[in-house]
Length: 212
Image 1 (cartoon, one colour):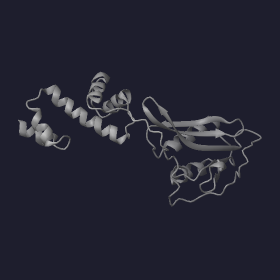
Image 2 (cartoon, one colour; image 1 turned 120 degrees about the vertical axis):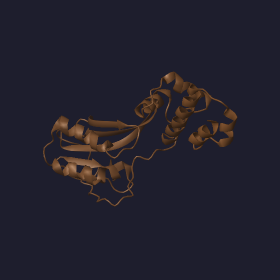
Image 3 (cartoon, one colour; image 1 turned 90 degrees about the horizontal axis):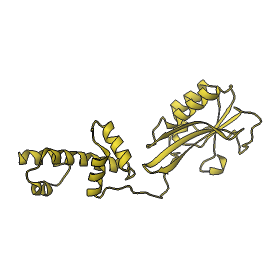
Image 4 (tube, one colour; image 1 turned 90 degrees about the vertical axis):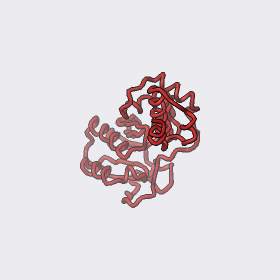
């Protein structure tokens, strides 16, 4: 049974460590499996998952486990939130998609609503780690009319924000939609959605944050 246990968990722990464990209870075996998942989720999240978010992720993986047990395993194994103040990239302009001209040209004034919209993606720190935030602003009122959040930079993040704004405002054809040159905004799916609703597409100059 010991050899079989070592074979089953050899990819998660060193053989030397497993040999020192000796006979283990079913709860200890389960703890080791859960710990392997915790380590993997911590790696994938760049150390940004605290106990609540980690528990939620494990439940989504099918592990019915309480937050106290998760907290104990994280604490015993030195797994903690690593708050990083390093810059997190939200714009990937190194892509092969088409780039639209800068129709807005830094004129952020609008005489009426649904005349000029602007979109962007940022990130915020929470107790459960980094969250990416995509927003759509109406430049007439500077009001957020569409938004979406995710703990990962998913491809549909910007699309969800745009879909919310369109559902809320039902903009007329010809409304200027301005963003940076990020791959999320230049993607075929996003541009297809803009064409469907008759937007005039506008994008910032290369590497110029003052354009948006």
